[in-house]
Image (cartoon, rainbow, N blue to C red; front, side, top):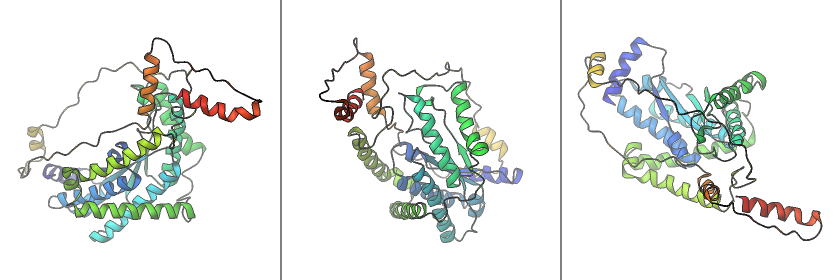
Length: 345
């Protein structure tokens, strides 16, 4: 933080309009955390960063040059409410810290945990829902993943669809033409308020544990993320939460999505201590050692069912089921479809 503060002072003087910091809560989402946990992590991380950078660069300058990032999944109702709740929470933080009220610069990033390896084409629909949530929810920046990302390196088709999803939303669907289109809608306003209240309660719990960094180092926050992740995993395993194309309506004769050959990547240049010292001659000496915490490991919601599919695909002979139907078509169709989906999954 000392190095970041010193470097930010130099960059702020040279590039006064540039954003310098990112508060990113996507790791909580990708590790299986709830929307309230992700929002709480966003503001707790922001407050922790402001405290640590304040001695080096003013808190108002830090706030003005920060981008906030949240994940968006296929549930666009939740996505819209989450973005609106984030703005309300940040406004409350600005008020509490005595900062001049300015709108947060908010980035929506399509979720990685929602994407599936099997029936990957369905990921296009998931990403479209995330893009809709970002546009309608008021994200300033929108980033959409390639639909074939879970399979490997996205090739031309995956990258083009990711870009065009945003262009179609903007140029053809005109989603940016109306400011705050869900403002005043009972569902959105109520849901955003409930999310903000739940996130604020979690934020207070984090502060009671000594702040975001202290909560992470003690493992308390990761424990709450794990509890949410495990509860959701049980519901997915029982198909209470469906994963389309994997646990519901699986397509066993699917056409695989394309991926690119692995590129030969060259490592980028590192900012060495010597280079940093040359850039910032008055760099303050480090007064603290680095701290570590248990990682928030990313997950995929479909992983358990996809493991079953992998085992079936690796078998010498594909598993087969004989389904006997009794009675007329109208009587057995619903049960037959249920059984077909269950055994295919």
